[in-house]
Amino acid sequence: MNYDFDGPSFVIASVAALISLAAWWENRRSRKAAEQSRDAAETSAGAAQQSAAASEVSAKAAARLTDIEADRRRDEREQYHRDLAPSHPGEIVTGLMTSEVTQQFGLFGSISVGRDYRVQVIGIAGNTCTPITGVPPVLRANTLYQFHIEQWPDEKTTPTVKEIEFRFWPPAPVDEVEAWTCPCGRLATQADNPAGHWAFRAVVKSPPPPPFAFYS
Ligand SMILES: [Zn+2]
Image 1: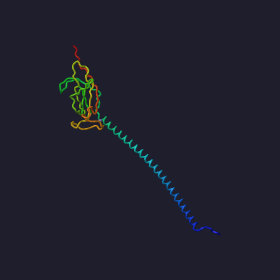
Image 2: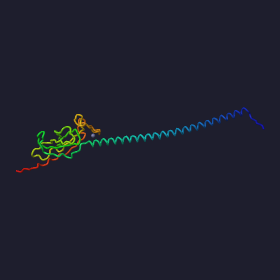
Image 3: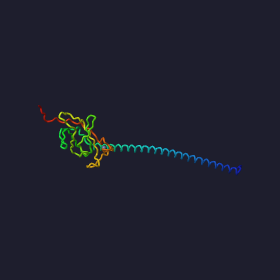
Image 4: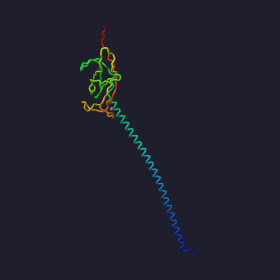
């Protein structure tokens, strides 16, 4: 058998082949690594997107909960405001009498409230508003206060003051009653909120006719 080859050339060729094989292998390995790394990057980007979406959902849920809580607190404060309001008398029942204090004869009304309030009372006759004097600045709970509405000459039959407006506030620190306030957030002092923390109007009824009629 004749092995006719050039020894050193064969070795060089084989080494070259080995080098080329190694290069191919390395190339393949690094391509695969690049693919894996790209896949990993895609997976990680996907996870980041999911995580961002989840964060957005949870932020929206948190904002919604905050809104619900704010609504609940507002409703609660409004409920306190309604619960602390003086009850509306419906209408002002009147009577003709002479004041024991001023000896003044005229039309009187009365009011009683369930807790202590600072108060202002105003008589409404058309476009005219007249403060009703003779009512103390603070009404104490469950006490009947009578107040003079207007003078009542003999010939008068119906009140000129058609409505009474009551403006109420929680007691001021200077008032000598137990302090309390309304947590609703509206301005609570007479100076800050002159229209009244609570206000309502009540119709003034005509006084009952005199019990006796004299004919001549
Ligand atoms: Zn209030």
